[in-house]
Image (cartoon, rainbow, N blue to C red):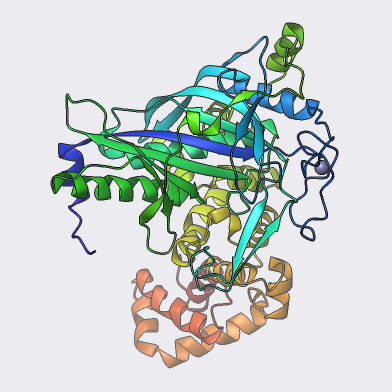
Length: 499
Ligand SMILES: [Zn+2]
């Protein structure tokens, strides 16, 4: 079925979106949630398993204290209340990637509840309510082979890997977020970005969306102004920050076209497709009753000591939003300039480049200029561009030492991004160093003067600005490997003119 989607601006002028986000975070503990199996990413399929995480009869789970501590720290960073007593619950469902045919999760007694996270969108602070933060175990992974899309449809075989089964997983659920209007997609993205930064600052997870250690489901509904909230859909496993924004936007447009045609929204899960940017229906949503939750009989209740919780709270690191404020002051940036640094995802990169010895202005210039442009062109996140803060600092060091001019530095940086090596190696290997041999430069200048007598006369008669043309000619002759300022001075000197 092909339908023409209405224009976004027009849709959000008529409908009010309500969004909600459920984020799953794999904790970076050494061992799994209820057994001693290792948790690192990768590894031969089904080698990091034991009777407990395979759910073999007679095996008993034991809760991982490091995972509980990490979850409490997340809850505290998100301004939640920490339960003084709570239980794990058994969530029953029959899926091939669930070896036990149930998942140990938390149901009506989450470890952390009722908090918030403030995010900035367009310079405005938006407070996102946090419903709950609870602890559970991850499922295994199924791999469908033989089909074109990697989906079960059209596959000839399905394989299952239980290495991931039992890795501690924290689920962070927001309260519904109404009132963001046209900004709903950006608010969703800003929330996941901020949450990722908070989790990273806590050091509880490597928060890699592409490896699935941070996974996001996005709930979206539409309603007419003054009416009840609409039926929501849940878009599953959105795998990048950019996709969070696209998934919300796409769902707003799709739901509007259904509603405009007099249709009803079905409560269902939907899959987001990175390639087309739209969603297709998955299964119709289970309700809590379908999962037949009951308290997990194999585990004792959790009762975190209040003194311990207070200790964890006192030891929380500076949170990203406050950290950014401090950096903004140190770097002397206006709100607008800081905003472009944030939008480019360059805060930590610039911070690390400055730590490696570069001035904030120079670090910002490279990350927001050349490298951001390249990231946009190739559609990758700036952090994955292939140049590290240390390399950018090294490059700027070469510029400061007069070995590279701006143009040559750009060429060298391209080489760094293309994986040719360090800035110094590329400069040396490709012979890109600025020509500082005055003898060679003087000869090139004299040649340019001889070849352009008209321009030389102009300069002699006082039109010093005409020197630019000769600088250009010498630059061309030296393949850009001269310092423009040095050249200009040399040209004026050879023509006997005061600069
Ligand atoms: Zn195990």
